[in-house]
Length: 262
Image (cartoon, rainbow, N blue to C red; front, top):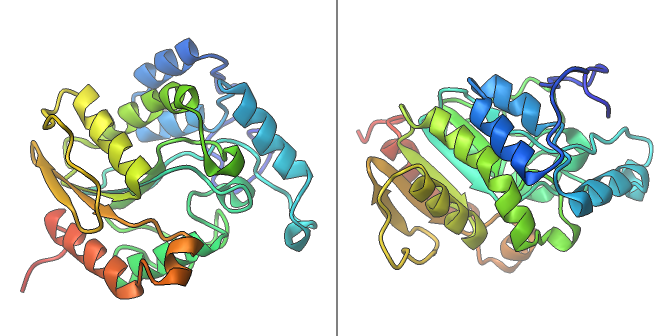
């Protein structure tokens, strides 16, 4: 979907500068003065050739159940409250989820689980998120993916991870004045979050704390809380239950000051 052609909530326009290399990513991420500026630049990034090829191929060779739909087929920007106290971090968009709908954690089973839990925790206005422009809103909360494009086999390379990192660094830096808690969905997001906070000058323990469901580490006033990812593998097998996810989000909401303890 070309920028500025009418997709709901498209943050970019025809004149939005495009990152075509890791150097461009660092430059444009560093120049973003607001979440809106950053979202626009993220949403047109073309710095990782393998990811660009894959996300656009998927958008043309659509899953049969979505073969009549237009796919977004671009990077997925962070989404939610631009002054959030709570941040939810995932690995990357799903090929037929966010890569289709244009919104992170939207349009697949993982997103169904997550938005339902956010709604139960009082952090989302609706229990579902089906597409951009559907009226969903996050309350005091923002979400982002450490890698912004859908990767083949859900596995970005280390080089792709590192190329994308400045986008996350810039987004978290903009949130830091009021950010109080981060929920890291899975080990990849846990490591990405700790690495990001370290690069932003926040002292992190060495060796880095190990990921685990319900694990917590306080870093300079920002508490990172781990959760198993709401993937089908985890939810179908019972490794992650609704109660377990609710407990993590409830705890994070309290840490972020979005809910009192009484």
